[in-house]
Image (cartoon, rainbow, N blue to C red):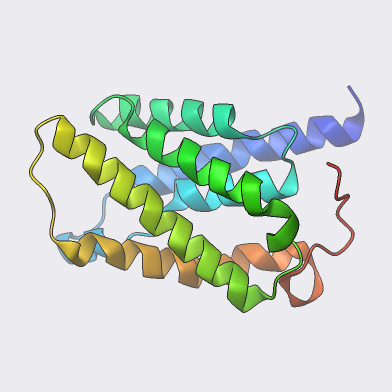
Length: 165
């Protein structure tokens, strides 16, 4: 394995650990609905950055790990994150050439889709349905995307990334 791939795998592991810690970090009750979807942001970023390394399977495993760590219905986050990864993989060629504002809309939309799916799966498991305030997290996720999206280069675009990677 090349040194570049080792660094990339290390970065993936560290960012996944960081996203899991941020997603599980306790917040005051008033801010719970505003917590960004860190795992969705992570999946979107790494699927855009390294689609051959991170895809639906990696997202599914990350979701299973999160479900196991939080004690939620097993597979709810796995379903949500794998669908988010699928949408980003399907739109990847376009997203890399969109403006940062368009990428913000995609990040927010993917986060909202993931939340809908996660709450749907939790509803199937017998959990009460939340009110629409859970969608505030999609807005904060979209607001966090410019920080992540700037990793793409000037204007939030693909920059020097290899389109085949």
